[in-house]
Image (tube, rainbow, N blue to C red; front, top):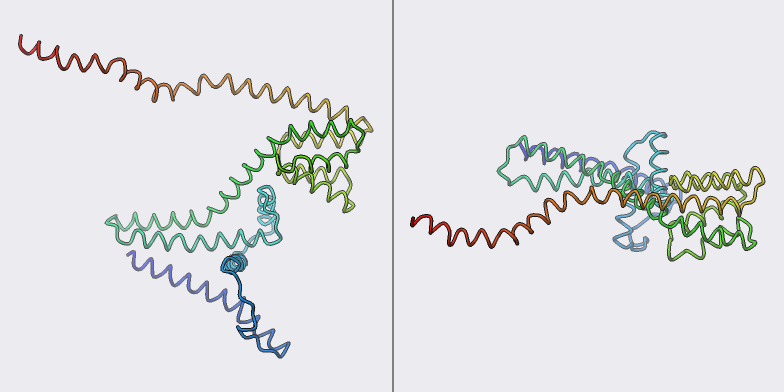
Length: 306
C-alpha cells in the first residue's frame, strides 16, 4: 500500500516539475531565440549561486498555485504585517507552500515505509504531512507577524516619548517622525522602519492623514492605531500636536502601569500549578524522605520481630 502511495506521489511531483519546466524555461527560451535570432547556450549564462537558484525555483513554483484576488490581498496584508515587503514576497510564499506540500509527504513516506505500523495509520501520517507542508508557511507568517507586532508595541512607548520631546522642542510632526526613526534605529528597528515608511510616503506626496492610516493598517497594533487617531484628529481640528501627544503619552503610561498591575495580580494564580507539581514534591522528598527511610529500616523490622 505504501509503495503505491509513494509511487503516486512521485508521479505527481514529476509531472508538476515537468510542467513547470516546460512553461517557464523551454517555451520562453524558444520564443526568445525566435524573436532575437540568437541561440541561448548555457555557456552564455553567468553561473549563479545555489541559494539564488533555489530562490528562483521557489518563486517560479509560486505561479503554479492559483489564488483568488481576495485571498491575495489578505496574504499580502499578512506578509506586510510580518515585515516581508519584497516585490516577489507573495510568489515566494506560494512557492514555499507548493514546495513543502510536495517534499514533506515524500520525506514522510520514506520515513514510515519501513515501520511496522498499520497501513491506514501510515496513510493518515502522509496526509497529515501534506497538510503540515502546505499550511506550515501560513503559520510561520502568522508567528512572524505576531512577533513583529510585539516588538512594535515594545518600542512604541520610547518612540512616543521621543516624539513628544521633538515636537515640544519646535520640530514639525514630519521632521519629528524622521528624527525618531533615526534616533531609535538600533534600539527599536521595527518601529523606526514604520516611521521611515511614513516619512517616505509624505515625501512622495501623500497626505499626512493617509500616510498615518497606512501606518495603522500595516502594523495592526492597537496602541499605534490610537496614536494615529490622535494625530489625525489634532491635524484636522487644529489643536496643538505637542499637547495631544503629551496627553496620549500620559494615557499610555497609565495604561501600561495598569497592565503591569493586572499581570502582577494574576501571578499568584499562575504560580499554583508550578508550585504544586514542581516545588511541593521536592519539599516532600526533602522533609518526609529521611523519616520514610528510618521507618522502612528500623520500625518495620521491629514490628516484624514482635
